[in-house]
Image 1 (cartoon, rainbow, N blue to C red):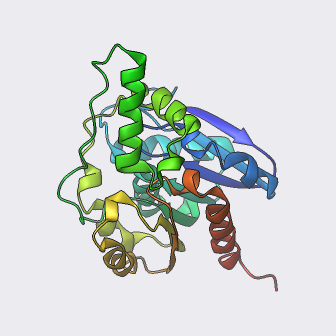
Image 2 (image 1 turned 90 degrees about the vertical axis):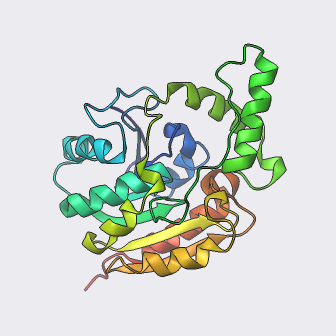
Length: 258
C-alpha cells in the first residue's frame, strides 16, 4: 500500500474515492499541510499504485489493510480521517470496527446509505483508441458524476481522471449501493461530521435532506455542511470553501484545554 505525505503536525488522513488515487486531493494537500497538519494520503488498496487487497475486492476488504497500515505509520493513536466517496465508506467501516484508530470522522460525498437503487450511467472509454475520443468520454463522465459546473471540467480534472481510472482493479464493488454505512453508524464512537456538494449527483432529487436525517444515526453526529455550486468531487470543485468547512469542523471537535 502506497502512502504520500505532506507537512508536519497532527496527522490528518485523507481517503480518496472509487476509481481514484491520492490525486482526488490534488487541490487540497498543500493547503491543509500549510495549516499545520501532517497530511497522509494513500492510494487505497486496488487503486493507483497500491496492490489489490487480498480476498475481498470491496470496502470491507480495504478496512483490514488500513487497520494494519495506520498503526505501522503512526503508532497506536486515534487520528482524524476524512473520507471522500468510496473512501468515506471505507473510513466509516474502519471507525466502526476499530474505534481506537479514529478520533474524528468527516464524510465527504460518501455513499452507503441505501438511498440509490441504480448507478449513474457513465460512458465507456476502455475500447477507445483515439486519445481525443477518450478525453471526450472522461469529460462526459466527470460532468455526469463528479463535477457540477461545466467550467470545473478543466484540464487538471481530465488529467486526474485519465490517470486514475485505468488503475482501478476493484471494478466489481457493490457495497456503495447498499445501506452498509448506515447500518454501521450506530457503532461509530467518535465524532462524525459531513461535507457534501449541494449538487452532488449521487444525492439529486432532494435526497440530501434525507441524508442528514440518516447521519443522525451516528451517536456523536455533529453537522452536515453543504457547499454551494459544487458537485460530488466537492474538494476539487470548491477547494477554498471545502477547506474552510473542514477546518471549522475539526476545530469544533478539538478537546478543550483545561
